[in-house]
Image (cartoon, rainbow, N blue to C red):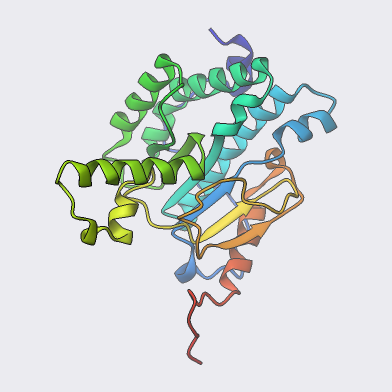
Length: 264
């Protein structure tokens, strides 16, 4: 069905993969961020620099995510939320949007056995409205297949926007209040978080943005309130486990005060 993608990704394996050999010298295993959020930026610009079409960058970027999730789980990261497709990305050329949807569909078909074999739990964050029914069916199947896995959580943000998520939560809470199921005085941060797309996940400790831009692009606006931010000019397709180690080392060198003071 997707000959180009099949040629690129190859055959999925159900075997447990061997650990990646990456230099982690200087990394404190006791201070690994539990949840890392990643804005996978620069796919199109990377492809253009290679003399390729933008869609090729998305293909390579999907492989990069696979490698990073594998290594992150290996060093003790508990969850990764990857920004795959925003609510604003529908404005991109129709051919590019169609390809991204096909890529997601193929990924959920070809890679799910391997993810499951390697104990990865799949989740999705974002609005289901507007996504093709076939994609939604595969997303639901991926969640159901991997729900009992106890390894790293891969949370893919699809048709996601931080502002839209907050509005979604507000409307959900308002509906509960209107129905008499919730009192206004009982609305708390915990209640609000239970109505976000990311409910059940801890707030990200570290936000990584490749591609050189210095903005958060409507990503996890509530959740990253106290996340450490690390950016690099490297485009996402060229992002490596070694760069992830570098980002975590910088994270470990910072004082996380959460608005307070650090006791010396």
